[in-house]
Length: 375
Image (tube, rainbow, N blue to C red; front, side, top):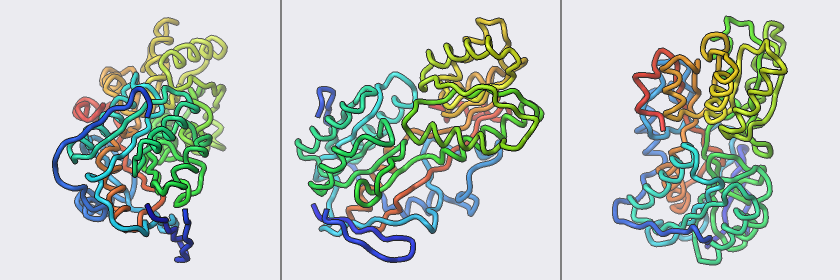
């Protein structure tokens, strides 16, 4: 395959010359992926689509991811080779974590279902939360001859050996969910995912609403080593910085797991009994926190409020039940956009190196009506 060209916001262009046991093939027949611009025009029905939803009525517009308009200061990448039809090649998908939580289950299913619908031959692997395994998975798929890679990175760093090999072979890499600290257009084509800083900011807004503006806060941090955790934390902390009525008394990692959330919450409320608000950086930790609070005789939703991020059915149901105050969505259904963007790139279209999606929010006003959009 041919080289990629990277166009900076100023218009200058620089040319760059440059499966695991769980693998499975997915194939079927259907139409080709839709053009990126065409899809954007169909899904962004109003000018407000370029801004994040801020009100309850914006939640639950459906399960399909919707792109917001690309920022003017984001560089673009262009494929300089002969156009390639994805239905005529093999695509590799590298999942980072086991499908044992709703986000990963929905993410993998979305990729596999879209490949099947489009008639694309897919090799899928799962690194089971091991970085070395993910590197090996990607290298194995490259050895099997995949011509496009879709990667859900485990961490923001550490995939360089695999990315270097992909670049040497001229295989474009589309990243989803977690952003790499690597060079766009050189190490990967684009990142498709949520605005994690904004998710943290929106969680802070819900915290202020839930507590009346005065709160003693504990933060259940996600896994270290990736920008999801960093940005969700920074977004929240920066939003309340300088607010003397809000005190963050603890920040501790629950590793994005329910067990971690339960264990950490039990420790934190014992050490800091005045905590009246918990910000959980994903739903699994929030659900673990609920159990820890109940075990300690606390009443979630009454004497302590929780806001989390993801949009799983169990967490949104907890909003309906009054145990969780709000859930900021992080939509995992990447399949349609990932294949659409890959096909547009291989057709020679300019692709922004960062493609952010719109995320809804589930509150007590809309959670019951929009529960069907949760995953």
